[in-house]
Length: 307
Image 1: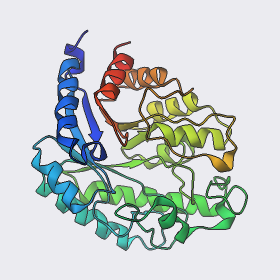
Image 2: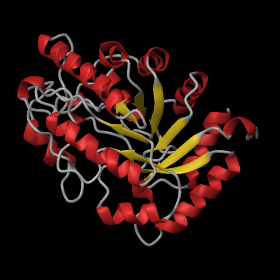
Image 3: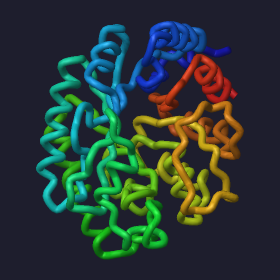
């Protein structure tokens, strides 16, 4: 094992893995697994975390990043005509990050709506929150949460330009912090789906989420690995959310869901190929966004990284 090449790799685990009575034991075992493979262990505070969970994680004294917005009633949407609420949330999260010595965060920021986007978690499900901004004309069939093909519309182009302008503002507003914008799961009008259609034009650091892209590629009849390379080659990918999806082309499009499952579950994603391409592209920060991640996921990642 060549750990010398691994010592610059940051491997965060999402904070949900350390909830409950066994959380601290899992943390110690995950940190030991990272040390075994020469990775720097960290935790990414998830946007669904409660204030009590965040304080507990902070108390562990390990490096942290953030999935913004933390402790918020509303998500961030830079594609709304009026983005003042989103900028307020970003400023509030910047204060939280500085207070707890975090310098890196990720957020979703491109939804085809002008309405405030309710946050989920802390007693509110994803579908319950996002259904409040549902637009049937943005749906694949007028009733499913799954996105239709609006990527060539004038509205999409206009909102994409708003996102680009506001991301530039964010880079100047928070020079000491990195706020990566994440590619979206294709539901409820979430629109940052592909490099060539949106992300590459932003000129802004990206968090590349594997299962979001896996779903988007199938919904839009594209090739997952080709679209991943488009992100890696055309964008500044500063962070990767790594997790596994059980969905296959046999799944009806309107029934697709997200992943967030262990890397060892049966899947046809060819995650080792994806990780190899990330390594070739120079990605140094990975987040195991796996709800109940364990050291087994770290060992699995190491096998992919070192293959």
